[in-house]
Amino acid sequence: MGIANYLIEGVSGAGKTSVAEELERRGFHVVHGDRNFAYYGDPDTGAPLDWPAFDDEAARIAWGYAHWIWPVAQVEAIIADLSVPVTFFCGGTRNSHRFIDRFDGVFVLEVDAETLAARLRRRPDDEFGGRTLERELVLRLHAGDAGLPAAAERIDATRPIGAVVDAILARCERRR
Image (cartoon, rainbow, N blue to C red; front, side, top):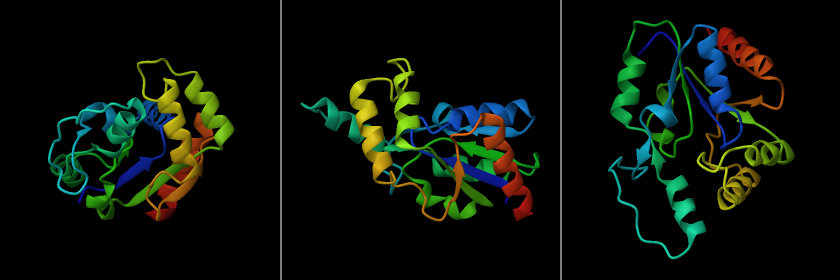
């Protein structure tokens, strides 16, 4: 196992990308799961999936969200890399149950519904959550806890990004 590896999760708009960019700015090794290697697949087997045909756009968006996964072998290879002292994996994935036990800590970024809705409204249409149906899905998932890791430490992500990252780093330090 790598020296220290942490997963940062949350619904779309919670601040995962902003946290990742601030951690990078501070010199930490960061894996942007959504940007680097996520794909649509079966959350239990990891098999890539083709998009089914949908008559309903909301059903298509929900299917995509439910099948957004990370390649387990790639995650495990990065975790096993001892060349960096700390790695933060940031992003959303529906198959974290396949590798979550390999992390030294898991954090879920939390925001209230009003803050989340405001953040999503500011997104461009080409970013997930930027379109009305995507926003509606994210807000429904937020209301139901979105299937996020239950054993994770909750981080108040309504504060300025520097304070959010400071809170994460303080909790990482306490774990060591």
